[in-house]
Length: 198
Image 1 (cartoon, rainbow, N blue to C red):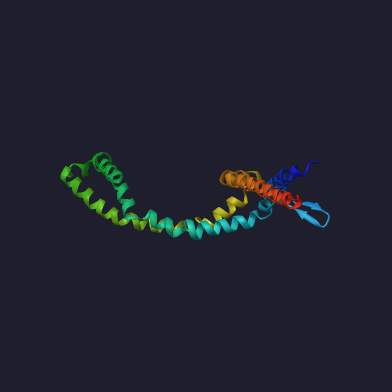
Image 2 (tube, one colour; image 1 turned 90 degrees about the horizontal axis):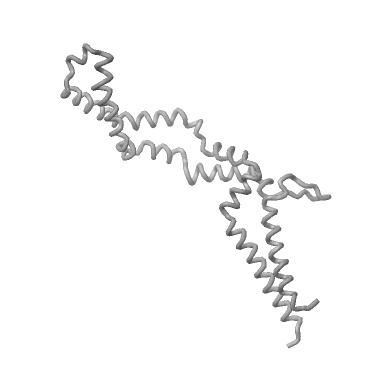
């Protein structure tokens, strides 16, 4: 065999080594006994730890419960829903209340309805953030983001976890394979140059 094939053989070895290394991130899915060694893909083996770290990251760095509280009680967000509340309140005072209490309707005209609606809307502006805050306090234990993310990721099948990570990092994985081939070729070329007389 010609020595000039050395760079190409090295390129193939570099590429196949990196390809196998990437595959071994996910495979074998179940522990495989090989004498004194047990072989298992890194992600299947460490899925629980990965899930716990991701849960902590999401809860502490990406989306904490306090972030959710801040967003839901933001006065601007509440202001945006007020037109809907006002429309519903108007319909209630104009249509539903007279039907439910006909005697009261005889004493309430449009100007009184407008006044009642104005007072109620002011009160609701103050009440909504307090209601939302109280509601969040009541459900805080059920909205343990760290636990939700940890449980969800830990329950993923190995196939799903591989699909997710491949979907995110497929280009990077391909780049690692190509780099393995390129480096293998360069090393093979260097070997060839070192073994050949000038």
